[in-house]
Length: 161
Image (tube, rainbow, N blue to C red):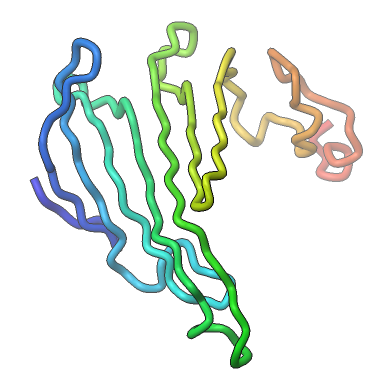
């Protein structure tokens, strides 16, 4: 399996057993310029990584995204200036949420060059109504289990009350 989709190249690189599932490993690399991520001075920062896919269901069980770090001194606006962009890896694990009947993120690990590590755990994932039915003031949605129409100033301004 090899393919290309909007600036990316994909290739099946093998299989890996995780738990009881034999997952396909599909790699990808961003090949089109400009890249989706750019450094502060505009230099391209291409992404690459893997999808771990259950071939029996098509579900994505894990994703990994990487970027290479770069010294931007050659791209900076002023001679002698320097911008450092770290190497980054973001690893996300997904699971089937029985209440939502959808695959949702369970854990996201971020690793930045110079050993900065971030771990995000997801619990009690909520299904929000379509954006048109939600309060335009997203802060009003925090902590609500069942979003309801709100009386925030942004909703009144948009005539959604």
